[in-house]
Length: 424
Ligand code: GLY
Image 1 (tube, rainbow, N blue to C red):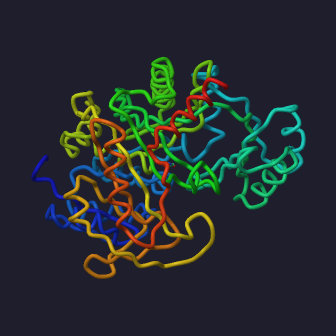
Image 2 (cartoon, helix red, strand yellow):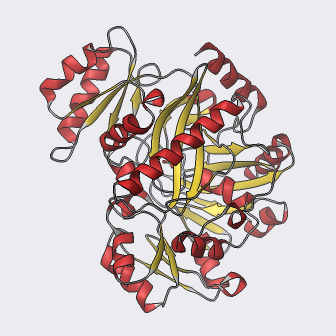
């Protein structure tokens, strides 16, 4: 593998970053329904793919890895059964209660509208968070405070989710945890787990965490495993919980490999689990892959062979900042498409990675947003957070039309998170 590897990508739209990587490698790409397990498997067979990686929540839930493994294609990513840790939050909570009850927030799972009133009342005066059990693209969770004003609002939202949900889909009513969030992009072959540094994702649309929740407007990591608001104990406790979750999945006969993007709250008395995702976090993937200085196809081979070791995932000891540039309508209203100019080569010369997301190339140097989503991410690493941030902000400032948060990587923002943890 290594330098001779070709990238053959099966994608939902002609993402300019993926198209370029595939073409430069001498590989290819095809556009199709990424949740059509048979179509993806047929593509892998036709291109004689040695090892495949399935990296998004819906294809994992649709059993794309199952289809690849069934035809003998080596794969990185969990089967549908392994990915249940993400697509069924009620299952994830039950599993967490078995392996790390001390880190599990109090929860009531409701399946019927008549259960909602009692479940909310069982929290007494405490604030709650309402979470759909299934996949929501990171946008379905509502929390008292930022999104819901009262228990009555929480009840209404839980009822709305039950009404909207597919047959039998449940809703979680959880105690609201106070503290600051962090994620760990744990990489595993199902047995060995390699832990990159903690990452922080900015999940609200506007500066100061105002506005609606989003899939993430930016993210950062530091040159050490922890973030400024975490103690070493938060990191080691979180890593130990991830190991226990992966071990329990294996004991249950569920195939898990790839990345477990695990979300936690750091609190004054340890960590609490938010959720587990059976794939890289977006944007956090770009932090870790910007720091990665090894041979990713070789790492995929080790993961799929069950022989992963830390040496397969060398990471530069630097800080990293990722900033998403988004459609002006993102998370607010339907709209667009928007055209924007971006000089990819110049930005890369200045030391930033350019990762397109929901965008296509309209003409050389000109791009068009797809839907109302995050269009393109800029990523940089540097010895200090301030230097990485300065570079991405400088490059983002030259891209017209798109919007981005000004406080991603800002030291005062991180100081505010430390205060939250101390007060939790
Ligand atoms: N950053 C949120 C997610 O990847 O689901």
